[in-house]
Image (tube, rainbow, N blue to C red; front, top):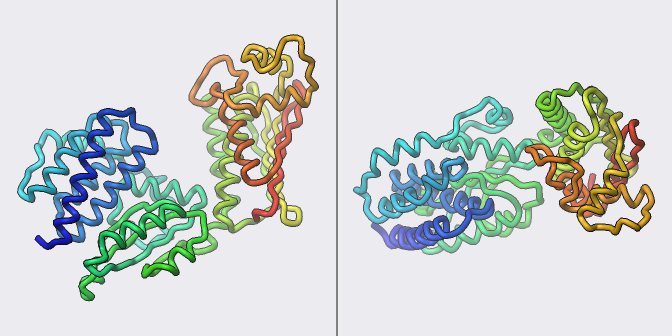
Length: 394
């Protein structure tokens, strides 16, 4: 065993011990689970480079377990067995734990393969199901996909690879780190990194020895029509759950190749369509989605012909939540603005769809963070329309 491998084992064991303590003493947050997921990514890739196949295979399965609903019953033991596998190459994982692990693995779905046709098979063949699912989701949300190859001289490997990953993670998400055998001929330790981002990464790559060996073609991102089709499909699924019939009408007079703009449009439309289906339409109705560009401004409009905003109900909810006093008179415009307040909802019960007062508050934050403006027009028993102006982001 060489010095590099010894250092890898020592550092990794210490990191696993820290994660094992945290997962048993803290309520795991989504951010902590992402930290676990990324760490297992790194362990798997580095173990493959050193030929530690049992370690790599276990880390691979624990990645999937971290993304499953069973993570709290699997990861504590998994970390313990991963540590033992690192310290003792002959260690055998108990059959009972292997059975538990296999039961937590996600099943492949047709949707997970939708966008993989544009990516060469050699870059996706080694991905776990959770990695494939994550990559598919990132692509559908407008991310650009890059595959890098990067090699390090052995003395510089640990610090170099750690620094490169750190710089990448500032710009996007590392989906997988895989060994890259071609660097062996140069006596280097090499990796192939699958990376998704909505940002410009030229500066990050130019300042490193990484080579881009694949990136999704530009036309992959000219996908407003597909994005809206997904929103409409989701709206129809939601309507079916609520036993409603909704006619979606689309008016599209805009184009964008910016993945960041596509992501922003997707998130805004998702909340507004869910709001229209759940709150706007009673049983049957129409929802119109309009996107157009005027000069360098993007204009989004989502309207419905439903019941409209009930201003008296909004006022009552604001009084109930101590946002205004009972004797305060407010204009219709001031009352309408309450729907954008955090934790404000007129829904009587909390469901998986609504009731937490998150959707319209999230839209307002998205729009304001993009230096845009949002307005709402509503007539009771006639309908509601949200209009959004986003400047200079095409």
